[in-house]
Amino acid sequence: MEIETNGTRIHVTLRGNGELALVFLHYYGGSSRTWEGVASNLPDRYRMIATDHRGWGESDAPADGYHIADLAADAEGVIVALGLARYILVGHSMGGKVAQLIASRRPRGLQGLVLVAPSPPSPTPLSDEQRATLTGAYQSRESVEFVIDHVLTAKPLDAACREQVIEDSLKAAPQAKAAWPNVAMREDITAAVASIDVPTIVISGALDQVDRVATLEAELLPRIPHAAMHVLPGVGHLSPLEAPAELARVIATFIAAIEDRPAVPGTPEQSTRSTAGTDRSKAITDSSPSET
Image (cartoon, rainbow, N blue to C red; front, side, top):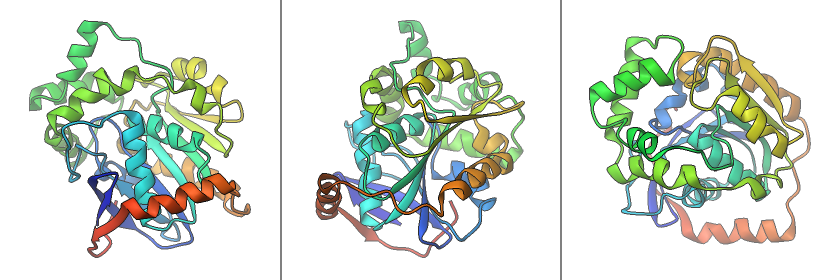
């Protein structure tokens, strides 16, 4: 499915049916395909939606507009276009920072927040050299393989998953690859995340070298004091690919604890904002549902 939102065509994959939806937002280097293993280990009674951020996967790649607020607006438009009445946001790494900003706005229908190895809301301190290295990390097959083996994972990926990561990393538009280290990682949304009021879980790999457990304990958890944290032993940054079944079990347990709660009420302002978004978000190509 393709959805026109925020002036950009966003690719969306769908799986399952149900009143409660899960909206998956991928990491820097990924795509909607990143969530396939997780989604296949969750019950089909959930409606599962995975997006390709602008510039990644099958989505359009505008010349600019890669701030966290732009990515959030894209995802919000997808939610409006699909008419999701009750949903949980699931964001990984870069997608986790996007999910934090969306949740901070207390949108109507949001029931919970799952942050998987999320980028913290504070700016990530990098030297110019480190920033240049990150910008070039996905420029060649060899560079992607190096990052997979030495930075992103603690467990070997099977051949198919490894090839998928390489393909997704190389396919992304140059402006999307450059924008995360040079723009979005520098953004400070710490004041905003203090407004998050839905049940929240942070899921981190014990061996994550990108967004380390200690970093999340220092930079994220104090700003969402009601959030719970779950650490996956022996897992690195790519838990959706390294340990999809284990990650799905943690997510399912979290959902089970909140899915019987009544819908989180929206304020009149939130209701107006959600309704207004319908005018700028529409499905433009509807194919048969496919797996995330």
